[in-house]
Image 1 (tube, one colour):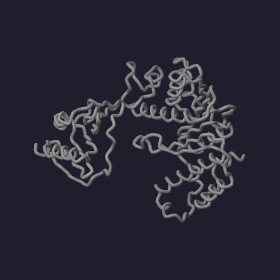
Image 2 (cartoon, rainbow, N blue to C red; image 1 turned 120 degrees about the vertical axis):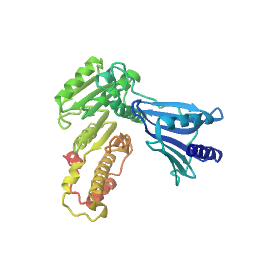
Image 3 (tube, helix red, strand yellow; image 1 turned 90 degrees about the vertical axis):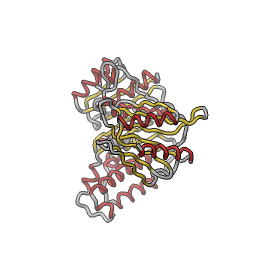
Image 4 (cartoon, rainbow, N blue to C red; image 1 turned 60 degrees about the vertical axis):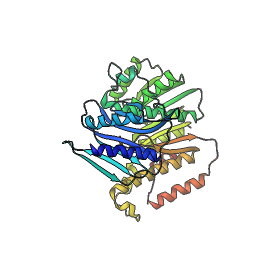
Length: 385
């Protein structure tokens, strides 16, 4: 196969010139084994260059390292039996092989996608913080053999990413020895249970967690599951966020609390003087409905999809500024990859002892409202009330 030989020559050339970036194999010819794609990168172990293969399955990733000579043999086998597309990325060009159903091979060269090489450090497999256990089985994430169910693989990844974020935030927040956590809009409790197991059972942190959820069937299910798992300091209450009376809250969590429920949660956290606030805002209907039919001067707001995104950004920016006004250091970042959901922004506030310029922050909020012709932001109103 001359095209494959040319591909290997391009690989050798990129390694010799030190401009190799990576290889990807995609479009599996059969999906029964669950292998979605393979990423190949250059690593250095004990001063020897090797190529590291990351086999991405539906439920997990597997990493294997090979010599450069062995890589060619394995690639040839994979392209013969398992994948229809291979792309070699270098700093000079991208070189792709595409194999049709009839076995015809087409080689395509395009301009390079990358301008920098990745590091060659040998990474350790990514740490999974969610330990396989009874609660994951009861919640339907694993089967009875403690294997992640394929359709729940994305949820399991989300749980581990969530725990990674929480771990880092707790390390950088001043918290008491015994922590009180409230999870508002806890739903079926996937993240609530994972957080309890991680903090209490793995990290041996003294924590009490309460989930707030309006749907009685979910509250009953979660409370029964907590009892079955012997999670003694985890309980769920059937009520709205507005109804919950926050006496002492060290960490308040509200992930995808719909529309103004995010603001209700933020208001409860500010009132309770929570040390750490973690939200993933959702829907953002309040300002959109308020401005329905209003003429906007900005050309960005001419197009529906841009208008929706802009209002989301304005809503969350005002939320962040209100938190800053109440002495919170704020962060806004991506929670999980947007291949899973576009509602993936996380807004975090960490209580600070530093004095803030309330007047300056208020002026920024008013300037935003004036620019977008916003009469009121729901969070401002309920805090004043």
